[in-house]
Amino acid sequence: MSGLSQLQSFTKSHCVAGLRAALRILDKWQATSDQACRILRISRSTYTRARQDDTDWSVGLDQDQMQRVSFVLNIHAALRTVFDNPENVYGFASMSNDNEFFNGRKPLDIMAQGDMVSLYETFRRIDALRGAQW
Image (cartoon, helix red, strand yellow):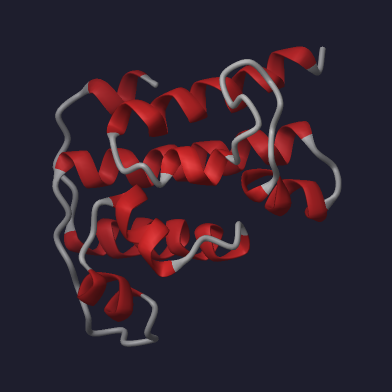
């Protein structure tokens, strides 16, 4: 996580690759376009363009947006570590969760509140599941 706190500059190709990877994951989590836009703090037009196969398209994302992309990628990595079957890897985010932090809510709904704290806390709780594996 130390890389997230350091000020980094990303090329537009890094931004496009990260954004497209995060959007593929969010699609598999069954996020709506509105949820994806709120989670990643991107506009509807950026969302639409990123989902197209236009190899000439580029986008610059700010540090906050790239951190959000990173959280989505890291949540996905944690889920892949915790679960063996794709149904849980991709379904967990849209399942009601009765653990303390989630209190019956879906992780996806919490992340889609759009604030960084909700996204970070969702990541932290899911990442902690890795430790429960040992």
